[in-house]
Image (cartoon, rainbow, N blue to C red; front, side, top):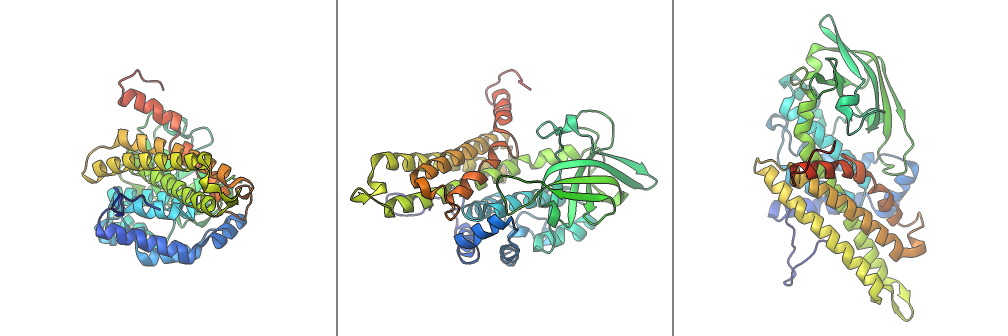
Length: 394
């Protein structure tokens, strides 16, 4: 449900063009037809990736949004937001998959060699290949540059990569990894190099980690034991890999915000329908003021986050720097999603506690975005310095 103005027209600051409205309808129709609630919850219970939905998304061409023109890329950040929001309103795990996917698309489009774009980006954009982004480690998430222990050293013309990455999404199904490894000793953001590594390269081990949510996309530990890659595997400039990652953080934060907004919107729609239909004391549950206030507060939180996200996306698409606005949007959207799903659980009562209803899935899944791709506390630290001019706190 998107809010309407008094004339009944759709009010959508992100997708308010004929093309984006058509894209939104296409994704919403696809989710309705291919990923209805019963099927989605069954896949979540089995912790199974939805290959059928993935195939239909490939046919729609959404995997190529934002890609290099040579690989059939079209659309921009706003189109990615529309796709992710509509997916998160239903199959949230696929929205998380798309956030990682679009990071890979942006990195390879901007920094990949012609050979890398042909070998890896082209099949990625058609859905024929999947990628996984191997950055975080057990001792470093937000502080990964300082904590990185995975290293790569030269062996003749090749590189040997060794180390362990953790909390890596989609690793069991990946055809290749984008791997960050330290190639120069130190703790700064310099001296870290990015590599394209085939998932079947000797020396790679993948083990799935048990998680509380986002069950349709595996979360893994990935080990690299002297994994040999050629010099051509380096993405961009040797030693500048982390700086290349920093370039995509605005887009990642915005896409995460879109995911949080979509899941929150799905939860609010479900809670509103339930309240309107649930008999209570001779009327409906939705007739009670306390219930209405919860639902209205949820709508306000969603649309407030959407406004920040629209402003950030407009700056990004225009070629500006949306660092502050994207950070604000990510914090606002993730915390709105937590609030909305909490309200939804309370409105549904016992039904919210049931695995037969989707509210519990949204309630679990949205917690991811409070700490990913950046913890909200760290985002606030950044905003305190960059937005308010306060002393650096980290």
